Length: 150
Image (cartoon, rainbow, N blue to C red; front, side, top):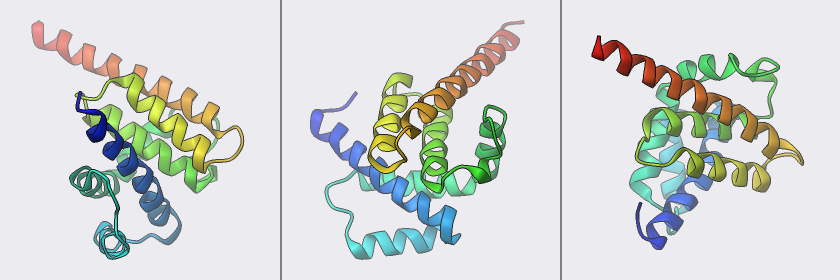
């Protein structure tokens, strides 16, 4: 992976992404509106390219991500707190698309975000859901690989 500074900037980008995805969940703003607002307010020392890439990609694929997450939840996604929903969307997207980041790093970062922004026990819920989600993603990837060999 990257240097300690790059990893810290990526972690701070995730923190800002949760805030941006919360705005999307609550106010329904577009990625462009959210990006403009966050840039105007100042993003600080974060991985800006990562923030931009993910805010657009996650919002664009929110329905798909939500459908996949709902298969693993004990209640409809809309009943989750918007903070938890935002963290789960971020973690799920990273697990689906950011293969260069180890699964454990993605889940650990999501758990820390849930501890920081979520309700008292939300970190446990986020951990459980993303762990199951990662297992599903890995299963699908291995099935695709097996079909490719035959």
